[in-house]
Image (cartoon, rainbow, N blue to C red; front, side, top):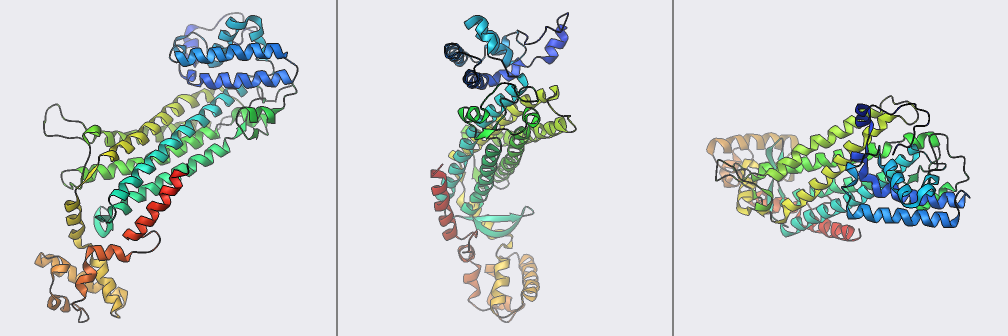
Amino acid sequence: MALWGGRFTQGPDQRFKDFNDSLKFDCAMALEDIDGSIGWAKAICEAGVLTLEEKDKLIQALNELRQEIADDPHKIAGEADEDIHSYVERRLIEKVGQLGKKLHTGRSRNDQVALDLKLWCRASSVKISEALVHLEKTLVECAKRHQGQIFPGYTHLQRAQPITFSHYILSYVQMFERDYKRLQNALDLMSTCPLGSAALAGTAYKIDRDALAVDLGFKEATFNSLDAVSDRDHVLELLSCASISMVHLSRLAEDLIIYNSGEAGFLELSDKVTSGSSLMPQKKNPDALELIRGKCGRVVGALTGMLVTMKALPMAYDKDLQEDKERLFDAMDTWHSCLDMAALCFEDLKLRESKVESAAKGGYSNATELADYLVSKGIAFREAHEIVGRTVLYAIEKNKALEDLSVDEFEKFSQVVGGDVYECLKLENIVAKRDIKGGTAPRQNALEIERLEKLLASR
């Protein structure tokens, strides 16, 4: 059913209808459209447009339609209606007759779709928030299981300094915690209700828009009708949140792919998140992680596309805005599935402790500690840096680790080195000394795990 047509002498070309209609994707907002319609029925009843009996009859019919949609949500997409608004209105008229035509009094599809989309964004954001918390909890549990485990720390993909595996895992918790906070901020910014803005100038009916906003779960009504019907900042913000978070997920996936490789062999992924080869029977491929890494571009592309759509868009509503939904719906679904899959990858992850400790000992990752040792003996750091550099070069030539050099060999480069140097070169002592807020020391990891457990439990 078209919601317009009196001004036209002929119907649309089928090719235009196929090009223009949006029901096949905006049907995802069916329940939101019904919620908004119920709220509007109450508001126009208060304004004297509907009697109490008419309002109750409309709400009953809308609730019946809600149940029908819940029972078979995929049926709507195959209907011939232009969009979800025309579908709901047609079905409502089928149920209550001419009364159904009164519901749209004072309302436009412009403020209607703005409302539906905000409601959808809000519900989706709550769902994503839960997935972020679940992933954070999973990572914290993993960090807790491996407290104190020495792990090689890298910069430039070169072994740098020893850290703990817990410290490494908790670094990603910080990223996802920021993602969570960004999402809560986006939720707060979308807490204004556009309904009542009509097409662009505001409705002529005496609607208590703030009461309507609260009824629909918002803090208050929007302050400008032009902005309200054309605002898609909440879409951009969600796509931005999704893109940043997907970059974090992609980085995590890349790390785990490298650490799972035969060359590193630091960990082994569960059979639940890997697949085999149709040709090579020995293969165990990290497909879940590779897909997370690949889907990052898909979400970032959605943000880029939406930014370009909004660029230079004239005030107020333009049909270009119909392009907001498909990429948003896909991006949010993708983000959610990747968060869920990342958590699954950690459920049965096996850390090869002897392999990571051996890697942490290699690459002269205790060289910085040797420089600090020389500083403690009164040598300026820049001079100590030079001495240790020459010592490492010597150790490489002799194919020895620093801790395997004798005191006599150390003394070739500095006379201040004594037998106490060996304690400072032990990896467990190196990480334990980084006992400051944010440091890699096991004590600091334990404190951070405790803090995060309390924080996440409160959500």
